[in-house]
Image 1 (spheres, rainbow, N blue to C red):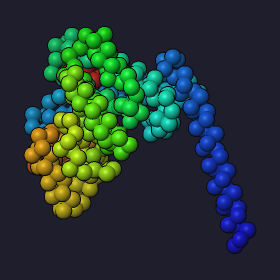
Image 2: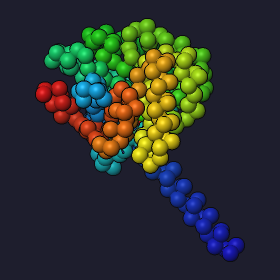
Image 3: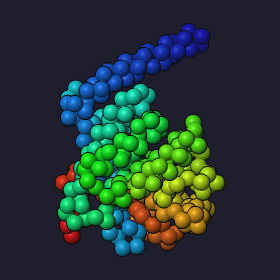
Image 4: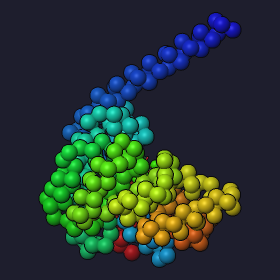
Length: 275
Ligand code: C2E
Ligand code: CA
Ligand code: CA
Ligand code: CA
């Protein structure tokens, strides 16, 4: 038993070494992904739960590596977030999204907004607010068409500093939303002091919505409380008509998920606006 235990340990060690090696290779390629033009943004529509019309898109990063093929965000974003690499990538995402917003506005879609995911390290960078302002100015877009999605993680290290940054962004006129609500140290208490306008209910909440009446009541209460606080609510990862129906009953404001569309290319995203 002792012997096999040792082997198992060796196997685990070998496996973790392999993962470390893979991470090293991916990191090396990711560093050049922006310059090589290997990154792309896909856009997933968010739909108004009442009228069923598209109100915004979430920009989601895609990496097609010349060496490794398609690498999912769950694999490479954490690697980028470990270092300053996320700053360069994040800057590209912001520029690309603002370029898309410019296009939307030029086509007459001035009410549609685009949301961008921002990592804690980006928000913590001293020049982040200036970067956002400059990018908006350079693309000549209305700041109201840009939304920044942050997660609760940004609050863990420095609640005060983060809140100040977010207020500065709000002052520029960009929208703010709190992403993945329900996965971390979600608290409705600090929601009151955060300058965000939208709360995004995590997919893990939505997944349980049909299995359990109490879960449905729980989500319904969160939506009610968010409304009391003046926040709009988005349900993420909605996959079925049944889930959609329940969420509409619960007064959820916006729906995002495969039930309407997966993230699509910019070209395909524009088709949502043509009918
Ligand atoms: P997220 O911000 O929570 O984004 C939503 C994720 O849920 C996306 O995964 C989206 O494709 C997926 N999704 C949407 N609807 C459904 C559904 O109905 N069913 C299922 N199963 N999934 C659905 P994706 O694109 O793989 O992105 C994963 C995560 O990577 C994102 O989670 C976000 O945290 C991060 N990410 C993506 N793009 C960026 C970026 O540009 N910057 C940063 N910092 N993070 C990003
Ligand atoms: Ca998000
Ligand atoms: Ca999310
Ligand atoms: Ca998520």
